Image (cartoon, rainbow over the protein chains, first blue to last red):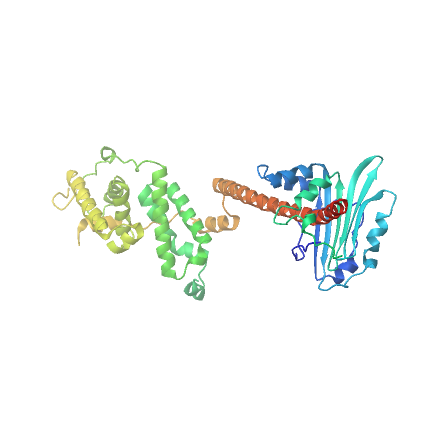
Length: 178
Length: 175
Length: 91
């Protein structure tokens, strides 16, 4: 996974976050991290923020559209000074919740080459998708995301190509030497 | 800070007592209305209360109060949008035998001063109520000294002329 | 000395204000702005507060917007990675 800009621990807006769809209890990870980002945005905050998105800007218009079905966004991102600072056991409290009946893993990618792993889980109620969980790990980074509501993952992936973050193209990745 | 005042124990109440006659009289002689003059005086001292921390010395307080009293009096006069209406024909003819020092003469002079335009009227009040020199009047009214002197000269000439018409003056003391 | 100037000094001599001016000033100072001025001060404060509130709301809105963008960037990266892996496999 490309390196994300290192973010210092941010003070989130003083909002009352709606309950996440699973507990992002990663205190043991935070204790080992050199930096961590904690973002919790409930529906009212998202609606408020949407008012300040510029519809005439293509990127912001896309975000505005994306936010329509979203009821909450909860993100925990950790950076570590060195590889090996964390282990899989640190993520067990989260993974255990995602193994519940309301969650289904829809895709998982494991890259043994560079140690990048990513999983997307879908939460359903009846036949309706009501949330997404994303667990992504690298040697020196962990990202856990819960998006409550309905979200277009294709559009979400496109957003990463804007705001100064370059898209990752298949052709850009080095080919494994034979 | 009002260090001297602190040393002598002065405070807002003390400043009010010390300067209330000055402030009230400037407003009274300019506006010719006691109730309005008291309102202006209260406003001036209330303004002092809000700006007390800027006052550095007792002399500064005196000058500050005088200047604010002048400004507030002028403002009030404009708000009332009239000169104190004492038309010359309304000024009662002095009784026979009026002499210097006669209270009726004082009352006449106060009324005549009230008929002057705004700027020379205040110049006369500051000169003869407060005994200020032209340079001090100029500072209080933020006008050139030459203008102050001009107002003084013309106002005195005008008053002499009006008094003379009434037979009051060196050449015409009645009685 | 000129008689007129003497008379003018006499006529324009300082007069004492009505009794109790000092007490009324002190009482009013303790009370704060009164009457119409209190109303005007309050109205002015509302105007200032409204302006300040508007600026504060804009600031809050921009902050919220930045937080949303940050959250979506962080969420988007792994999804992109998955997409690229899947496309790489399928090519």
